[in-house]
Image (cartoon, rainbow, N blue to C red):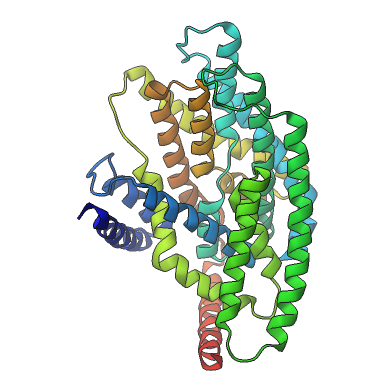
Length: 423
């Protein structure tokens, strides 16, 4: 019977995320906030109704891949090209400021008895955790608000991708130089890592260019059976995600995003987007958002650790807003757009947890004391991001925006009916 427990877990996740999502919508918050809170409530932190499992972790990973693939489908390639240099500057400053902030925050709380060299790397590693950005929550919120294709939205997407690359380079540098308690942890030469990242971008750009051309020609000439486009798109997304992660050591979501960009602008891009939105809405997104809350376990924490958790969460929020906001201002974005970009980069998500796990393997993080605060910081930044995004993206002409959104939904429905008839 235990083999079928995953069915009940998924049922609980879908019901709770939908119910609390509607509650969030009722109080004028993005529905993703309700999904995140649902994960907290049904997880070990409170009711413990849904145990963590490898199956749910895999579904969650697939969820974030599809989410980033969908984000790529909605990208305006011309606008993304315009903000390329700006995204790099935003990401660079958005990495440096949290790195310093995390180091200075952890130093007074670090009770390690190791030598000064290891203590230095322990403090530095906490800063490295704060450099991470998980844009998946931001993407879902901006899609819900209808702001994903704005100038600020494209800058956030570009900066988040570059942020991942800079994070990989920084992680490699620190793990290559820092002393490790785990002899099984392999240290990769920095030059090799940089070469692999460069090769990935060459391979990804070539693959996306070829696929875009072939897919566009194919969809233009092919007849009524459009379902093959969905399968082909999904295969390309999964393949490029796998190649990125396994072949080049780049985050799989980066490969998924590039796969989506390759299809954006093609004749059947809207049809593909509609189908993947259904797949994501029905299963993958709820499991992904709930899984973040499922990771939180509130074990016994001393007053000092609780204080550290609070300060770490505040520093995590402020350093991204300040760092990325300053970068945006330097690139001549206006004040409102700079704040929007800074807020959009707050969420740490699964990227920070991956880095934290790496530090735990190397003995650079005391898991009994400091892993809990890191997880709570991730959850706090993840929940607060969509709330702040709604505030900073709020337009004075909300009425006009709602009307335009209604027209867009009507047009989508008309297109959907045409798609059904053409199948």
